[in-house]
Length: 362
Image (cartoon, rainbow, N blue to C red; front, side):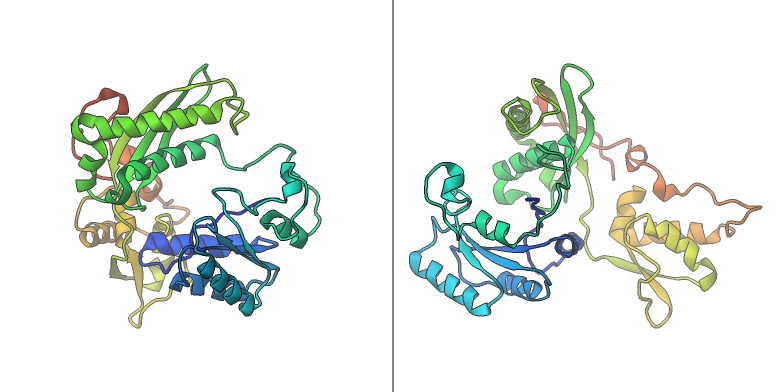
């Protein structure tokens, strides 16, 4: 059974939220069965209603799982089960991911009698027969560096609770397992400068705690008893955490007037920024909408995104059109963002210092 995990269903208000919802749609497109997991400790929410609307359009079998039954009041659990059964979208299974209640058939855990209504049993009954899509024993198609970044991000959010938003991200700068020790260097990407001091903490103690806890979990994962097989018996002894300032992907736009003769050239350049494609609708005056914050992020410009990106596009439009006699110059947007930002703030977890490096932009 291959599980395609998706972000939680919500009504997006930022570019990040919309990207997460696109991931949900893409994952559903490649699934044989749709499993919708709802929180059994709370009543029906707007997000749950959005989830129901998405399920209605799914062409395959649908299963609704009510999680956290170990903490849900019996009356509320019964009301939720009755409501979802009335929707007639598919089987409804109540379970607890924390305790394992009704997740697997009891016989699979060596406990005797089977339970036809378990979550795994219900999903298995609706899955089609298929030859193996992955080698036996492979449990994920993601690299170890991805799990390292997720562990660092988990420890950061767990220690800082509501002080740092979930938009904060972790970027793996280096993952080297060629030697006897595996070296990892990661950058914490934050929304605002004011959050840097929160993450660093007094005397660098918070950053040190995040690094220590993350290293312990990564080492545990790498041992033979863990999930990883490629890193067996190796210990992750070095973990440097670097704080890099990044702009939030808000809906800041600016407009630039272009003509058909340069439309394709601007599209090619802005497309590398990840926020333009040729089918993007123009307004009545034939103007293109450009995501200014995203362009600033990749180009490495400072504040006033509408001015800096407009200046960049003016420079692009002033260049002669590419041709065989006049080949296109190298696209500056394709350069490595790390090379454009040599002054990124560095804060090494092992240093124990609360001072940040020189100011820079990314």
